[in-house]
Amino acid sequence: MRAHLGDQLVIESPTTGGARRDGEIVGLHHSDGTPPYDVHWSDTGEVTLVFPGPDAHIRHLEHEQPGTTHEAPPGTTGAEPVSTVAAPAGTPNPGDIGRRVGTERRRQGLSLEEAARRARMSPSYLSYLEEQPADPTMPALIRLADALGTSATALLGGGVDLPPGQGHALLHPQLRDLSPDECRALLSTHGIGRVAVSTSDGHPAVVPVNYDVVDEAIVFRTAPDSVAAAAVGTEVAFEVDHVDEALSQGWSVLAVGPASVVTEPEVVRGLAQRAHTTPWAGGEREMWVSIRPTSLTGRRITPADE
Image (cartoon, rainbow, N blue to C red):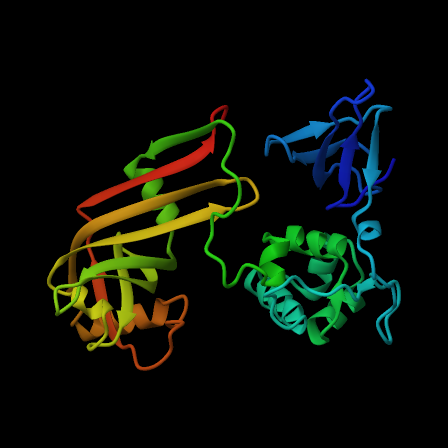
């Protein structure tokens, strides 16, 4: 028995008419694809280590996709198969897959050769994928996502226009409060969060911003006439969260505190120099706002047995 990441492990019931069980293979313990496997079960959502018995068989994902053809990219050797299956509805141009792969690889600081080694594919094929509008097969995409620390859905872009959290809830979820230290660790140093403010007309508003954490203060750049600028001089709420769609888990952190504009030239220059990214919204956003949390709370959803 040999499998690839993304293949399905099916266990038939030993009794006639009995229910069978299936799950996605999300982890390999041997490079040749032999057991055991880490399996994400479709009925429970749990991931367990499985040593398949005689009642189990592998359903290879690439064999389940009608219309798939395998061809080698021009000028490459030992290349991965290329799929001509249509992308899911709502997915951007297939060429975007290569751009996402390249962007994520560089973000992780991986060379082309190292990323290809981790994904168990040839560097020439990975180079071709990043530069051409070719669709990899789903197993190859899953291996790439695993190598880059992301998901196949994220590389496909199929969920770009969908809100997170559309998957099924855990059978036995556990919701627990996070300590202030856990909240600080999850805020980390930067990311995208949401600031809740009252606008000049008295209406509430929630605005996503690129933020950094400097000396335990949450800082972000905005424009003086923007909605986010209404935070200055008031007590605001700032929220950041993460959702793991595959495992139906996630966490959220809420910081509450006064917001003020940063005016000291030296401090402003220091913030600009150490900023991890420019605001994604673009435009002139040179006003720095600082939030000093007086309250820091959070919650995490996990399986009850964790």
